[in-house]
Image (tube, rainbow, N blue to C red; front, side, top):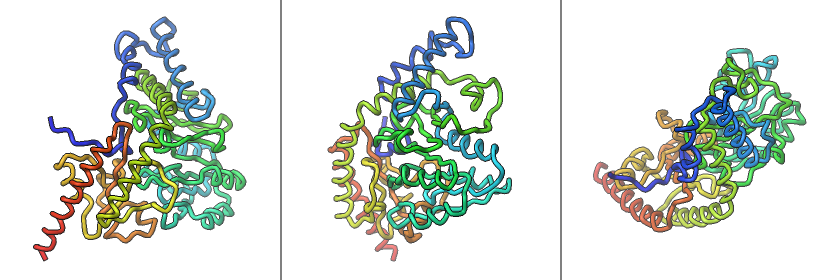
Length: 382
C-alpha cells in the first residue's frame, strides 16, 4: 500500500501505540456507562476521572476545571456561545489569525446584537499591541486569542493579553489546541478564563477535547440533557477516547523537551533549505512552534504543489485542514499583509515525533525537482 511520508502533524497525529493500549479495555470488556451505578459503570467513571486528572496536570489546572468535549471546535463554541448567553450583548474581540471555529461563532453572535471587532496582527503574525490596547478601552465582554497559530506556528503573548483583557473587565479565552504538546503551557500561569485543547493533536484519538474553564465563569450549555460534565456538556461520555486523551496528555508532557529540541533543529534545517530554493517563510521573525514551517514560492500554486508532492510520496498541507474546502487564500497570511498571489502558494510542513532527518532530506530533494518541473511547464506555456 502506498503510504506517503507524513508531514502534516498540525492537522492530526497518528495514535501512539501506548495510547491505543490504554484505550483497548474500554472498547471491549469495560464497556460501561459512567453514569451507571453498578460495577461496569463505576469502572468507566473511574477511568474518566483518571483521564481528567491527567489532562488537568498537563496544563496546570485542577481536574474540576476540565470539561470534556468532542474536540477543539466544540470547546471553542461552548465557551464563546455559552459565555455570551449569560451576558447582555456587547463587544467580542477575536484575533485576526483565529481558527474558523472561533471566527464563525463570534460572527454568529452578531445576530444576537453583539458587536465583533478584530485584533489586527503585524507582518510576523503577532497581535499588534497598540490595536489591542485600543480595543480594550472599548470595554469588551469577551476576548479570544489563540496561543499558537495552526498555520504559521506563531505564538502570542497570552499572559500579557489576558492581563489586559482582565483589567478591561473581559473574559479571556485562548485556543491552545496547537500549543499543547509543543510548548510548556499552564492554565494557572496564563491566568485565562478558559482554554481549549484537543486529543488528536498530541497522538491521542480523534473525538476528544476539553474546555479548561475557571469555575467562576458561568456558561450556558450547548447540549442539554442528563447533566454530564458539570451540566455543560450532556451526553454519555466517550470513555475510550477520553482515556486515550488522558494517556496522550501525560505522554506529551513527559516527552516534551526531548521532542521539541529535535523538532526545532529539524525545522531550522528545513527552512534553511527552503530559503535556498527561493521560498518565502512566513512568521520567521516571531517566536513560533518548533515543528511548523509555512512557506510559499513565487508563481507556484499551493494546491498544485501539494497534489504533486502527495503523488511523489509526501503528505503536506496548503493550510488549515479545517479550511481545505475554502478556495480563498489563508486568512492568516492576508491579515499579515501577504499579497494574494503569494498567499495562494502557501504550503505547511508540520513535523512530528517520528519525523526522520532522512525523510526531510528526501522531501527537500523532491520539492526542488517538483518546483523545477512546474517552472519549466510555466515557461513553455508562456
